[in-house]
Length: 363
Image (cartoon, rainbow, N blue to C red; front, side, top):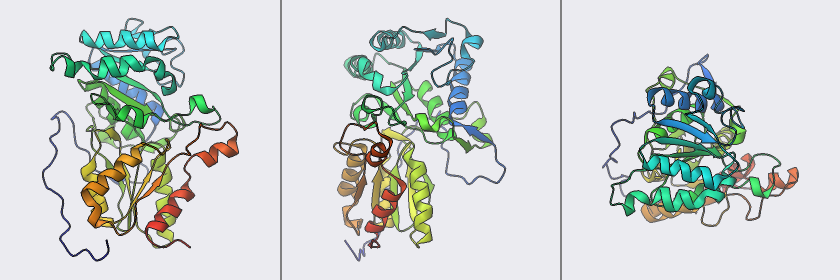
């Protein structure tokens, strides 16, 4: 509601983090900073963790001799041999079950799905075996396994290969769900996922693999690691909060630039972690800006954005000066035709329009 007079404050109690995680604050990069593609960031993270821990191994379809469908595992077979880089048959249910069993025995598998759409073949092992075993064993069994691969829409691959699984897996207790945007995200979060004692679903984006991002010397260090459960403020602002993850972070940043041209200061939050969700950072931002726009490529019903909106309504409702705006993919299977595919996914102009509505600046 308008005219809030009470003090805007958030409970100062900080969330306990594992000491092995290094908290990395948002930073500005100088001109000429080093750059790295998301593909190379993921590859280097796996390589360094395999080098540091002999229990880490990679398995999946074409991860070895072909060096990965998207070349994320390039060079690993030659360096570590077939005992630690396993080419599997085309049987997601089979090799995922083997991976979970290996994690039961104390190894640290990194299981690659050629696309997360294929993970549905293995969803019983992911949810009923990996996610629930620690609870059902009263904490006696840890399942240190990473399920990784491209998630969400790519380009022209149709309804069966374009789905976002963030909301699916984030609804499951016992799983941690991460979604990197930049090269720094990819390196730091994948390292954290591999070191974590619990199962982690690591959702990448095919269209980001070839994109280059500035990367700091700190992020290039082999000990670098990002905290699971902590979002990053990519751009500070005071008029409206835009919360999103993965590829949509780039769209949100471009929308923020357009909004700035019209005098609207947008704060952009990169979630990084879908489960656990950094509710504190989201609500702190909303209490500052009094407006919220959420963006995701997945379906609108029961989505990640719906959970974020619920959190803000529950914790920061009296700070809102406008209804929350929720942008998501269309509630239809993904069309194959390029023009319809574009209409089915959030676009930069959608974020701009929603932000202007929230600021009562729409025409």
